[in-house]
Image (cartoon, rainbow, N blue to C red; front, side, top):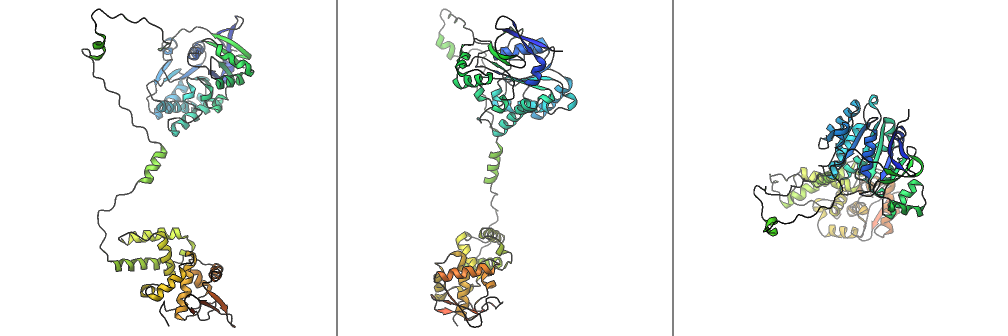
Length: 500
């Protein structure tokens, strides 16, 4: 059985009928500027179809609460919690009650959250309760905006996702979306594109007229006809309305909105002797003192919370660190660097990771003062890996060694220092494995490549004797190592920078 509701009068004076069963399967989009009669059209549709199908109205302005008296709609306030709204929506579907969700006392973000929760409850209802429902959303551009606005991303995504579910996936769950908007350009395209029936009212902006003409299959020159439509007149198209664009004049309604278009009213005549200035500036008897309503604190977004967590710093401990002399502090630093250099796993980690480990160790030892910066740490670690420490790292000879390696990249300074240590002590040339440990690596091949790089810079001269042992001379220091097997595990030199 086909159920048709009369929407008004079409061209030629014949009744304009809307196939309700077809509407349930194909959805409806209503567009028109403010004052074009969208709310009047929705009210006509709701009144005519109320006896035949369950209805849910998302009402941001409280215009449709008057349906409760004439047709028994239950008015649900939007100030319930989101979880409560979801449970109410589930009971609405279970008991097949027509409701009006009024959001007039909420700000825009709260309206979006409430609508998202209620639509989500309708959408997630149990399969046994998937009865046909007309879901009417007035001012749909508020709940499915085409672009981000001043509301939080969380609220916008939740509302847009609920509207997308309604229009894209609601049909199989018995939900027939009917959305009304002032401007198509403000409405998300993936929401508007799912409607197959259209009622286009008066509009003036070129972009909205062009988009409305495209939806109705009109030529561009016919788009300007939308400017000439009177209040309550619409162009209809769709399987539930007409297969060709059809002008319709919406019929009268039995109920009325609590708010209506402003009417001109004559100004009151002042009584004789009234002082108009005193009348408006002097408070009357019993008049309550006025105070601006406090603005609610803005709800922090997830991004704000993450930023606050990133900026949080725990309070400094009240207990002061123990006093420590400069010599004792240097000794602790040297010990920490030796521990890091001796760690067999340190060669696998980049310098940034080792620096973080160094800072942690300093805090654990409660080392006073500022720790080494990254550059000084890299240099001191190279010295520790070369085994140069204590008094041997001081004096004129040590200064000459440090000056000779100052022009080399930090990556190879540890290798140069180990060679200098062996050359000053007259010890055999360190093996490839020893050189690799000095640069924080386990790769002998990498050590050989860096040694070749040092030689290319003129800081070292390598030669091989008749037995295949390697000898490295350091021209800047005027000394050379004893022959050493590059493959073998020759002992590291016991001397430091001390002369022979």
